[in-house]
Image (cartoon, rainbow, N blue to C red):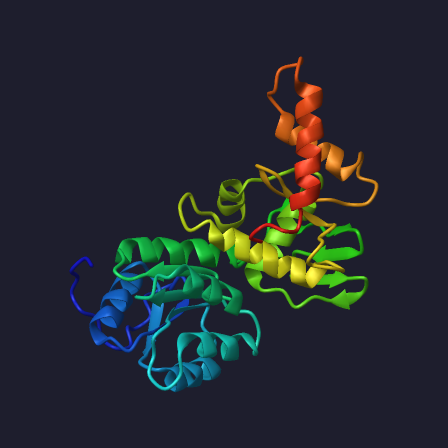
Length: 288
């Protein structure tokens, strides 16, 4: 980790602070380094050394973002994140020494927006904070992004950040909302995980399982049968696509055509047929 002068436990708010961040870590050195970098980047920062203290500070004054260590005394980061989420959406970046894929996925499924594994670069962490806050909706959305979205019983209002399926309100996290809104803006178009990470998360790097987990969570909330998704489809060899009824063409046919894109004219028919069969077998059975 990079060396930096240590910051006080509660860094005073800079003039015109960019946002309020709560740092939760029981390691004083790590916490002080993170606080110091965030404070110099223009954020008002508070610290907590364990889960109960974090929940107390969260209840007293809700931050704009939480940097949350997973391995905490008394109450782990998963439980802290769940309890914070129970009071409403708040961006969370998990910070932990545990880098197993199972832990990363559990952190994301708990509602974390990002996951940074120790040892880490504090400058990279600051960039992640900036990205998550930017995507959390600081400032009014642009005109295109502000228009209501609808289709297949879904209705989203990006300004109010409300989402409904068949008139029933959906409990979406900030990132789930952004992902669904993006897919609704481009129905019938397939996106790779790297492209979704850039467009929805604003990252040019990161763990692609982040996208996979969020697709799975979103299917669980919008699909009639998440095990056999009909709205958010897996496109064999490409990524994911949102299908709306009557948006033109059969889903499997489009899926096969996308896989066959670039194939020679002589064997295009065979490639399309094979791709359609493979897509039909694998859609909904992949890792997401």
